[in-house]
Amino acid sequence: MLKTEWKFAQLPPGDLRLGIYLHGSALGRKLAPDRDVLMKYKNGELDWSAFTQLYLEKIQKMWDAKDEAIMTVARFVKDDPRTLWLVCWEKQSNPLCHRHLLLKFLEEKFPSPDKT
Image 1: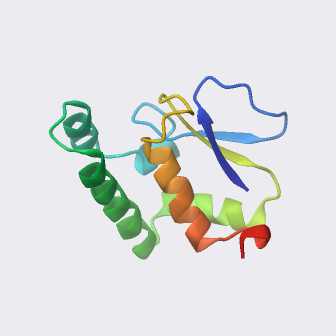
Image 2: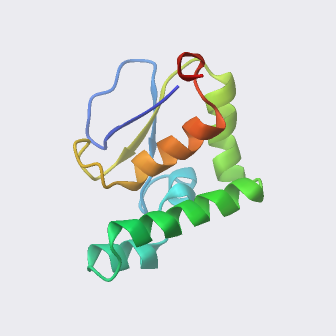
């Protein structure tokens, strides 16, 4: 199961946390937006729609290439009963965060039984 949360949130015992940001783990860094795209968005050079398109193109390319980072997360979602929390610096209440995009992308690839 996948869920999203703010980086500093207290998570339930036994659940796993994956920081999806530029200074996170190697796996999290690979799944984060590219630095130049993120900075253009933060500086107002890209709007949310353009940022979303570029980020999802990156994730789709990783999926198509069977990149190790996204395949690792995919295997976890498919095979592990624990919850994997995708976390970031943005507050959970902010819908404009790439972790929500990654969650939706993966949920489309692996719909939970109650959503099919």
